[in-house]
Length: 72
Image 1 (cartoon, rainbow, N blue to C red):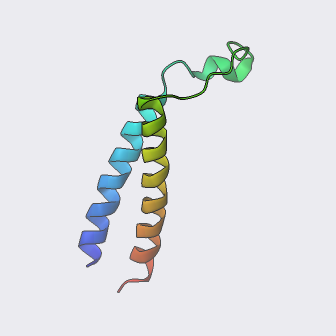
Image 2 (image 1 turned 30 degrees about the vertical axis):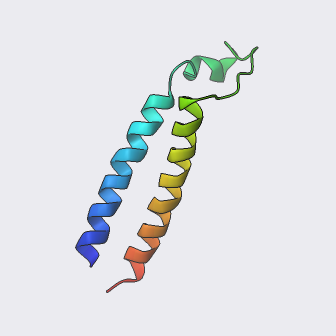
């Protein structure tokens, strides 16, 4: 059981990393120092789905990690 949970955790971590890297378009570190922050743009279409999936996978990762912690 622990091995299955570990594999699920690894797969979720890879998916989370992939989705976070895909979201990085146009929102680089330059905006952290005041550049490019003049316009606010809402997420639409595929960007909104990727953001939603990232959130779901992060929550699943947290739950699987907690379950893995308490399973013998």
